[in-house]
Image 1 (cartoon, rainbow, N blue to C red):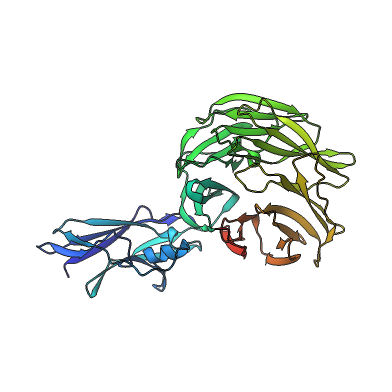
Image 2 (cartoon, one colour):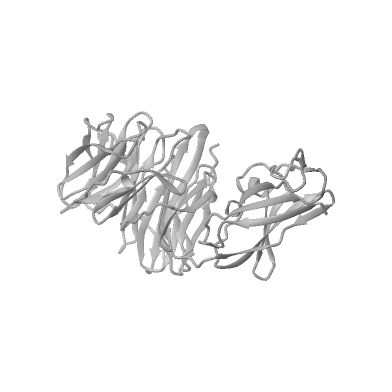
Length: 468
C-alpha cells in the first residue's frame, strides 16, 4: 500500500471531559505522486476509532458524527476533492476527540486513526491515553448571547486543582468546542463567571475570584487570560454571581457590606475606574444582576427585617451608574429564599422570587414587577407532595417566565420540579454537588451536577417549545 498513517497526542493523561487534541498524519510511501481524497476535508473518510483498554470499539470520530451532535439536519457526506500527495510529503488532519464524545469515566483508552482510500482503509497503530479519576468541584455557568443568534454556554470548575474552562453550544451545554485547563496560574478561595450582554464576535468571559480577600482573575480566551483584573481588596462580600459586563464593556462587581452595597466599575482592560455605593439595611444579600443592550443595569437584593424580608431593585441607565435608583418592590412576612431575573437582551418588566416553608412544604413564586406602581402578583400557596423533608435549592426561569426548581429531599435526594405540572422528578440520591439547571436556547432544560465520582454529569430533563 502506498500510504501510511500515524496518530499522535500531545500528552497521555487527561482529566474527565477534557479536550483531547489528536493529530493524524498521512504519508505517501511510494516513489510517485498519489491522488487521494482530500485528507483534511470534512467527510466520513478520515476518522478516529475509540476503544476501551481491551480493544472493544466504543465510538468513531468523523465529521458526520459532529454534525449530528450539533443538531444539524442529517445530510449525505460530500465527496471531498482530490488531493495530490507527493512522496514522503506528510499531510496532517487535527481532531478534538471530546468534541465528538465525552470520555469521562476513568481508565485507559485506545485511539486509532483510519482513512478510506479506494477500496482500502489505511489504519494507524493505536495510541493509548488515560482518563484520570474525577475530582471536580465548584461548577459555574453563564450563557452568552452572540451575533446572529448564537448562544454559547461558558462553564468553569476545578478538577485536580486545575481550573477548567468549557465552551458549550446553545442546544446542549455538553456538546463542546473545548474543555481546557487554564495555563495561567489562577488561585482563588472562590470564583465565578460574570454575566455579559456584550454580543460581538470577539467576546470573552470574565473569570473572577477572591484570594486572601483580594480580587483575582481576568478575561479568558480559551485556556489563558487575555488580561488580568486590577487587584483590589474587599472588605465585605463580593457577589460574583451578580457581576456583569455592560454593553459598553464596563465590568461591574457588587460588594455587600453591613450598611451599603459598593459597585466596583472596571474598564474593558480590567482597570478599576470608578466606584458607586448605595445605602442598605443590615442583613442584606445580593440576589441577581443583569445588564442590557439599551444601557440599563439592574441589581436586585434582599433585606432581612424583623417581620420577614423585602426585595429591592437598584436600577441605572447611565454608564457610570450616577443615576442609580433604589426601589422597594415587595415585602413579605415570609423569607424570600431566592430571586432570579429572566434571560433577555431587553430590560425585563418583572423578575421572580421564591418563598418556601419546609415545615408546611409550601411553595410560593412571586412575579415581581419592576414598576412599583403595579401590584406584584402574589401567588396562591402550593403544597408540594413529597415523602420526606424538603429543602429548596435553586430556581431558574425562561424568558417567558416558566419556572424550574431543584429541591433536596431528606438531605440526600436531588429532585427536579417543574412548576407547570406540579410534579417532582427524581434525579439521584448518590453523593452529588453543585447541581444547577441550564435553560438552553432551543432544546429546553438541562441539569448539570457533579456526581459521587467527581465527574460532571449532564441530563436533559425538560423539552420545551423551540423558539427558533
